[in-house]
Length: 261
Image 1 (cartoon, helix red, strand yellow):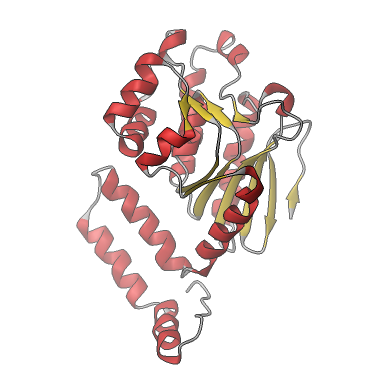
Image 2 (spheres, rainbow, N blue to C red):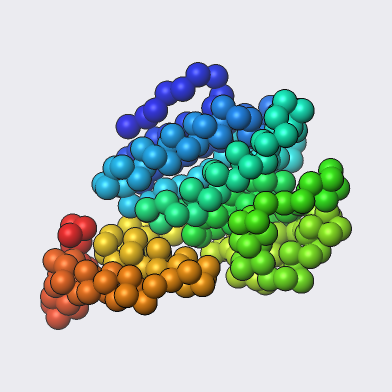
């Protein structure tokens, strides 16, 4: 399934349980305008509604760029039109963070501004060597929104988040790798192989347990969890056909055939 949209807004392709969203404005370093943000939110809604989708991949078209850029973040011109734009931008990583399927960012270029929070909102990240990460919010006079700051500190730690925001300098991906942010940091030649191996591994997991555990981990990370909710998710998985199939597959020494119920 392909979703066709006007011009160069983010595209959506769905195949074999994987939804792929592609940023496709390389001429403007894949910057995101208000229409792009609305399109991404529409794509997220469609993905959440399709329970056959088990993995979502977010990637960017970088072919032809002198230096690959995954995304330059919010299109700065839009800030002149609407001072509430950063709050609208916030809705994209906030919704992405809670998306039902496992989300994978295929970070095949440098990333800047608000797009860094979009990366942080993904569950897993495969990154390409030799790129950089930069957050220029303070350099343009902007105090960043709360959930974005929270994701930064949770995933990068306080010290690195201070360096990113308070100095606004580019951080090499190799430096970020020490935080555990990237599932793998690989050369350009091996990037697609590493990405596909990661997606294939996620598709091998039991869907119900995977999606419920994803949400529980986020709840715990945000210190906003209800033990009874986590216990209910645990009980749901224990009573599922997938868990019965998983146990049987272990006994029979074969790969499980999960059906998501």
